[in-house]
Image (cartoon, rainbow, N blue to C red; front, side, top):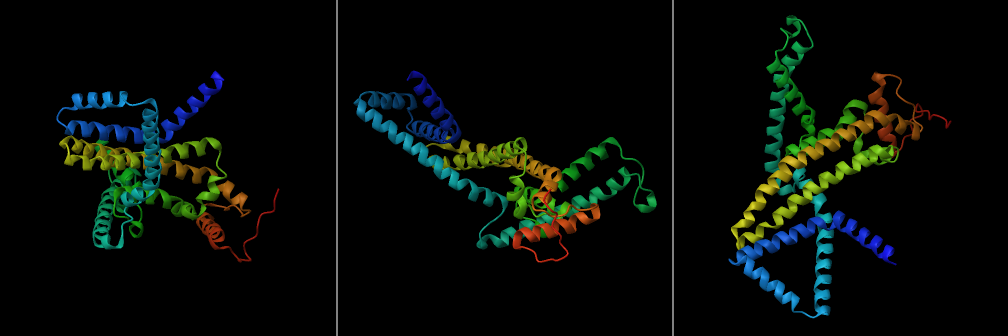
Length: 314
């Protein structure tokens, strides 16, 4: 029986670490802020602990159960808020914010055009093209570093017609549309099908990367929920730097990591997708995009193209 209870307790601890740790930290932080607002945090905390210790055992158990329910409920609520918060951070804003969204999109388009204009002559020189074709002398070290930074920025910048209002949204949009530009495969349509064909290792890496994205979003939301405590103590303003770090530093890196893994999934396993759907593999690089577009259309709405011959099962 001892072994059973130890195993049960271990599972409960694992479950709490997975779902309730962030909520526990939030409520602990909110409690600390409340105590700081009293002006005598140590004395107030000691008094509250004495009051709790003076309760009957049944009353203590009831309070603990209420606390567990509050933790579980707030964790479930945060799970529901994470996706809408991520969509807002990406730039999917309500219609009344369209004027601001449009101005920000235009700004990103202009900035991307400036990056391309600066990177193009550097790239021509790195490729060794003659001056008649826009080339020139070899790049020095500083120019190579600058070109690398420009290429990194352009990699996470979608085409002008797909631009969103925020850098985070543009990075995710660039990752989502990369298979479409390279292979004619629409990731939004084909990702559920490809996911079932991926090896376990890659799926675990993708799931872990997505959890890091969601965790960074949720951490920022938890930080924002601490701000109303500023009415009691100015220490609550420390939540703002935390939100900035989570949403402007940690989250972009997590999104890029997920985008790289998504691109790798299409690069390495798109052939498995063709075979599973019994579509013929592209014969060469020139046929890649038309074949991907046919596959996307067939999955999205079916196909009656008589020229499309299914590959027989082996």
